[in-house]
Length: 268
Length: 263
Image (tube, rainbow over all chains, first blue to last red; front, side, top):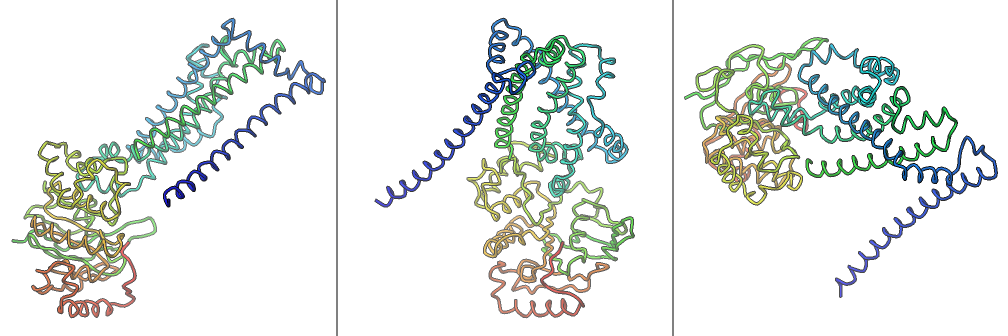
């Protein structure tokens, strides 16, 4: 008898959570539909210039068309490839640089002003130089995606290395561990959660780098479609590309988030 | 035979604004299998002594010898236990225990079975595959003890290892540590701010004074107390007399309160 009462309480609790979740989802959908219909209506009534701001129906029909003829998929593949690669290179390189800095306190001190300047500089301003150095192609765009996140990753990860509780190192040193062993056994694993949260930031940054890179040199990809649409005044194309980018960026972010919770579960 | 000797050891801490003399001319020697405690006010350099013996840093002046060999050149292992367990949260209990052997690159079947045996001795056999977060504070400190013992250290250094625990757990752990030290005939140095703990666990107690840190008095714990388990020492008639004596000496030093903790 008592147990069934307990169960009822628990069921009530679960039901409440479910209802709350439904309310939130409901309003999220309402907001989305509201936005789409306002956009569509405003465009049809010429409250906004349909030539500049397009409309959801035009965007979706263009998207449909582009997906059918394969050109959107092609552009998407190119940009996604560049972004993922830029993201991975930027993150891995950043972590390697941070590790090198950690290995020598003196080196870190020497490098400090250079890192500060390089970090403060808007990396996309390096675009023309990168293109000259790596040629007008994939390589330049990938480098743009990487360079935009590498220094900030270095700085964040390096400061996380230094914030690891020194007592873990003490434990290892009392066993006679070398600095390298301390890094492998304590510093690096203790910093994994920080590294993963830099991944989340880097996903967004790499998109910026790659899109700007495509603006500058490419004749393929989503960034190219945007700049092309702008040049020929086809803003439906610009909007369509934006929608695809937003979707992709969100999906990538979610994947990294899943990776994060998986890794934290298996390391902490 | 003298096991560990500190001969005129001094230590300075330097900073850009000046220096502090943490240890001033410390000389002491410890016999094999002896359990000594160091007590004293905050900042008297108790922990500095342990850090130096643990080879985490080198003394500015003076000589330290372990088994007639200079400490820095000695290949012998030294165990060091901190105030908190500092188990690595991402490693299982077994992996934590095998940290020492892993660092010196000699994990063998033998070390693993030795680890299991020690874990069993502290009643934690069932936790081998658990993670530290699944264990209570007392259990974790027991694992930390096993992690220290697995390297078979010549000497064990305890830097207030029980101070973060609740009272009951602390008493139980005192008994366990005392028993393990006797069983394996280990030499041990305990730094503590708890007089009762020092008296109940040690054979000898060094009282230190601060700025600069030096040893001002040595107390010998009577034989009757040394042979008892820590928990029963606290109830022994001779316990109170020694406690009062140490207490008086502590309070003779000006500006000293017992509530202050070692940093």
